[in-house]
Image 1 (cartoon, rainbow, N blue to C red):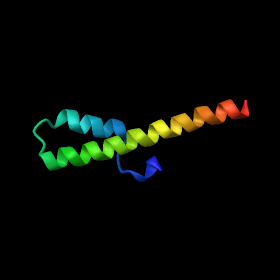
Image 2 (tube, rainbow, N blue to C red; image 1 turned 90 degrees about the vertical axis):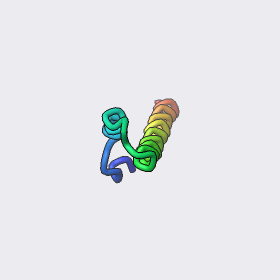
Image 3 (cartoon, rainbow, N blue to C red; image 1 turned 135 degrees about the vertical axis):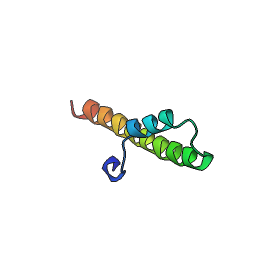
Length: 56
């Protein structure tokens, strides 16, 4: 699922940090994409932990 995005969450954060003068629209788009990725990462991590506890 995360592989469908053209960038990683780290790359998005780096883009935000390196472009303080970015337009509001660009900043909002990058933040939206970043937050979606972070949510997916946390859900995957939680499911991995849940699976480990059930199976072992």
